[in-house]
Image (cartoon, one colour):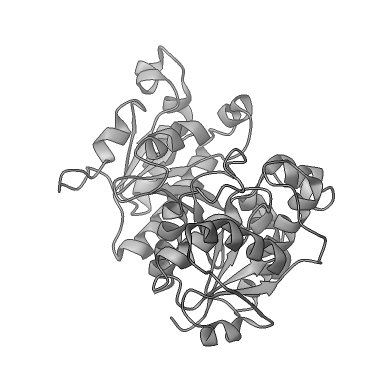
Length: 345
């Protein structure tokens, strides 16, 4: 790996710091060349919780990403990316934790945009805490929108000119979303031919780059049975099908729209067999994420497509109910780090 990889600590009141410590403890070979953008005191406290198992996990403060390479295995290099503000209470939403989490993401994004790191892996943040932090973070529903805004600022354009999409993936299924963190009512309004076509283009480019070939894209309908010929809604006829046709005219291997209650099963790779599709484009957040998460949140990885740098994340949240216990599972974070490494190559 030519450039180091940065992992943001996530919400300090959640399990982010603990799963980072566990990742270093359980798979130090996967973490080679990685460092944490966060708060040194927060990571040392998390190490203390995990060290209850009888294993020492030292935390070393670094001042530049390049210093991470000199830190020994199972010693966590942490770059102080936030103002020292004191430790927060585990398991409790706080504006302080939200601001710290936002500051870490901004630091990491800007380092990636400057070319100082090769990829960004984000531990979970809490959207309520991010909003409570006030400006500038209150205007961002989550990681994706904040990273998009930072990329646009760096490129000197508007966020709309840096279209991004969320992909959730594991070793059995990939799904990309037309809309992300909006109400269901607004998500339906966003099912427009232009948005679907843009999603298909981003998916074709990004997933194709990862696979080394053009991906086979299955497109989910919006309505039950994909509208049943217009009986249950006309979005498939008037918006989705025209977008698929245009994508096909551009050389994109997209098919559909298919009934959303079966297309994910058709795409699933299982029992040693590949699925009918390499990826499914879903029309809204829960339609696409429930099938992937049902297969196991410990294996899922969130990937932001369309950014000018690699960004992955675990597919779970801050788990406030487990924070401070040392019992959090690091497998999804490790999967996110492995996927980021693959995407960097």
